[in-house]
Length: 178
Image (cartoon, rainbow, N blue to C red; front, side, top):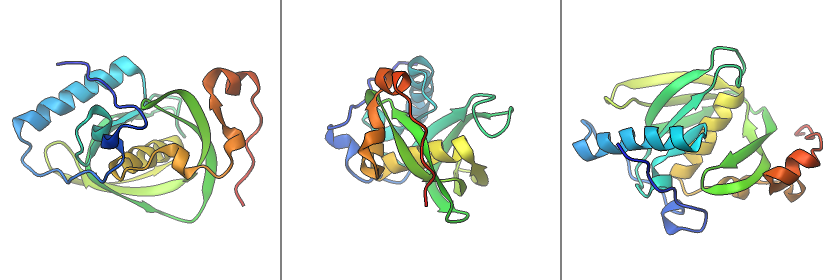
């Protein structure tokens, strides 16, 4: 396994729509997933989409550490191929997001609070998960990467966008979305 280089905002691999994953996985794609797991572990993020490591395929991995999400259990490292995200209602909330492809910055991004995620695991087995809170935010963020969307494109208020150190130093409460 290897730690992969992460594409940064501005690289064309992050602009386009990724191609669907076909099953069974070819050995190169299975190897990519193993490398992505090691890369995410090294980088310390919550998720990593294949385009971020210069592989424009419709897959990502994510996890939610215990205590970070809506419950204390968290979400174990999960592979998602060919995802489809459907909001379960119209409720959105602002939440802080960073991105491994935009190091050192974060912003308050509006996201649906409850979603249905359909997709396939690494073996091609279909699944349906209902997610809320932080897990729903991470999945929407990673799915955006597969469509060439980066979180600054979702911003409504650039006054909640800045360098991590400054946001922490001068934190302001986030407004409710109306």
